[in-house]
Length: 435
Image (cartoon, rainbow, N blue to C red; front, side, top):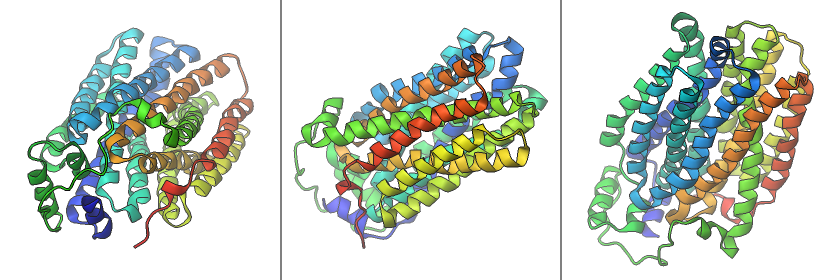
């Protein structure tokens, strides 16, 4: 309690800002790594003569890896530490991205994307916990939102890079660039990212007090004379702890809302560039449509994160998802005119992905330190089932020759249901403490 109050009641130090920025940069690279496949999809489909359903499987395979990584690898973070998991995951992702650039068959591509997904699924919950635990309560919604904004920022930057790189050097080049950037982060994280103070306090390694005080001094805080007794016996980091009677309702609602939202988000992120190209526009315009979705997401995430500190998460998530469903329907019936597609694509990113990322802040708030990464990891992992189905279902609807309008209506419906479920989550833990 004393350590948490030290963070909550004090100013934000340079070290805390550095932790947040490092985690944001890593999440930006994850966004590039995940979305690289959607930017590379049109030339891959042409080179290997892939049908839409097969391409949907390629998209979904990486997301299967992310689901498994979130559910079964990320919970290990509550045992080995946030910093260790981030380092291991960065190394695995970098190697898998190199492998993606070297593949020669569809099966090899599926394996490489699955391993990439495992690493990304494992790292995201650790980044979220790290940022939440280094941030004062009054700013936590905003900083978790800024962290998650790194994902579409990476996708946006990756889109610009892909628009130049792929026509010039081929689709494999984007994966080699992503690998180089990710592996370059390993030594930086090792040297500059400290372990979570709350994790050290909860797990109590032999040198816990020394390590905590070293970081507190660097934050400009007074060192602790001793670690006080734990408020309660540490809970094992198992999924059962997320389903105890006092947590079960919120956990199940959060999982369901996240899964429905993921269904729509990953359909959008995976298929928008290809749908625009199929409408008769050039590859560069398809990539720019994807860029606008991600650019809108960045602004929407930050706006929701800032506003939720004043108005609360639930009503804002509800409003964002409702508006996002409307924007999806509008996009589905637009003619193939570049300005209109880009503007509505921006609004889709702002509302749909902005509301989606708000659920990460909910997860970071409703679980205590000892099971926070397990809670976030399982929320992401269960949600990934929606993200796996979304791209594959999109491919099926295209193969069935559904027109664009009905396809987008199909994915607007889950957003409406997710909005209703999200607003029913208990509000008690979601109200930031005031200064």
